[in-house]
Amino acid sequence: MYKKIVYKIRNEVSLNTRQLPFLCTQDKLNYQAARKKHFENLPSISDYEQSLINKIKSEGVAMTSLEALSIPSTKLMFQAAKTLMPKIPSSLSQNKKEYVVHASPEQILEHKEIFLWGLEQRLINIIENYIGLPVAYHGAYYRRDTVNPVQLKSRLWHIDPEDRKVLKVIIYLNDVDKENGPFEYIPQSLTDKIVSSLRYNHGYVQDKTMEKVISPLNFKSCLGVAGTVIFASTGSIFHRGKIPIYSDRYTLFFDYTSRNPIVHNHYGASFLCKEHIELLAKNLTPQQRECLFWKEHFWQPFSW
Image (cartoon, rainbow, N blue to C red):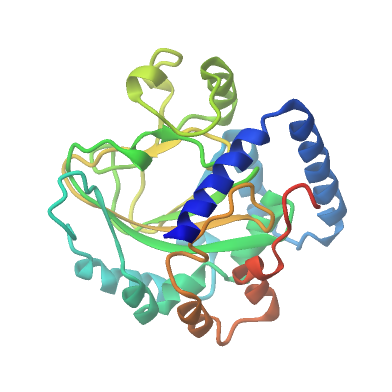
């Protein structure tokens, strides 16, 4: 509990002080210098993968499919995810405000193909080319978003504050249309204007506030069948999970930042303890281990 409080205070200080003109300018210069220095070390990618990155940079989101990505371990990962689907309960408590249930650490360990898919080299190469710096893998999350009217946290408009570039890879495990909770976003160009209009720093924005500065016609929903993949630059665009109306939504989320994030989360990779992560990492390559155990070489703010 004590560590949690310390990290919360530290994160608030980081988010607020980086808005100060001098620190903001110096931080930006250091960040740009680090990306420039790393540019020559970026891994090679295909034309198709580059097209995804270009789309993320311009729009904030790029959609594709597991089949199109052609990642070697996809079949095992997707089978494991489907096997786990009926084992995720619709509720874990009597709390009426509960709107999402995650797979437990034990379930993730049992179906390790899910967690390890997020470290596949082809995927890391795409992410590193987008972020422009060595990648930190924050883990895999298996979500069941349930049908109920609760509109809190991730169901409200927000921008992820963890880093200058945050990338989430989202996989739909069931077909998702407008009525069962699609991932929604506001395109990059419009997000920039809204940030200025609302003087947004971090936190959640209610619909009624958002609709004062932009028409709902500009909200974009990511619709797709099971196996749809969404690359979302969640540190750069307003986004949310729309409330499911007719059926629950099942998804996998894989989270990535640079290894010098603004917000230093207290939970390590996903919600797994270090012993569990060590078990999962047993057969990883040195580069994959660096993505997973990045905190052991954590750079302090402004020390690029």
